[in-house]
Length: 365
Image (cartoon, helix red, strand yellow):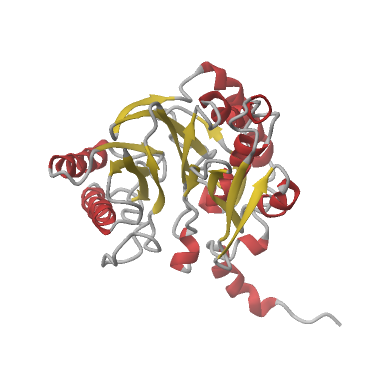
């Protein structure tokens, strides 16, 4: 069965501050999605949230970047923004950068990850959703999942993965892309992946079957807006089992928190903490950054799930490590490397302060 899985998210109002999503907002999104399913636009859907980001997970047969699906998402975000404004939620509609829909939501603020697949006999999917971080946050996890045999033993002992995976990497500043193959080009690949503020993994493909294995949102919200309006808060879809890594291999990179950009005012480095949906409420210094993992089985396009995969004591140590790292970094206050380097602060609120101080700088003798 040919199927499209679309995950489209937006921050349309925080409760309280940037911490969480109000139940009325989720209820309004649920109403829109249910109507679309009843009308036959969608096969199935699931509405959830990560922190203050509204997440729309949809299955349909209309292909990627379909205008009808994107318009449904846009209209849902607008309807939920109306709810957020009535409740006076913080930053209501902040990810919606335009008043008029232009065919699809790309470049309009919301984050998008979509893949069109031929549904397998057993189609296991993990959807990662993050808050208070940037699109490059998935670089390290995707590298570990699909290129690191110390994480994914299937790359060594499973014949159907031994040929490796191909990575599509986007330069989000120059709007270019490159395809690199693992394992033979991993050194070249790491040149790019090690700079997540500029380069982000857009998609991963099985090299032998050519099937898509993973896709992430690479939209840089501040670059679209030309100013700071919140962090990207990316999403990522990963197919599991069979000739893809097992669910346990896909989750393993999050057993130890990696350091990502984002956190307070999108201007700091912090640990990416894996949590259940219920615990994805970044409150300490608007953080630390959070990530949730929703597991589904697909059956004729129906979303069987979700299984809240980080709701597991096996990730308690990762959460403790994240808190320990947060303690260390917070001691540095406004100093780098807790605060982002100046070249990465271009689209934050700092340039307004720097402009005021510009006249104070004089030439050295």
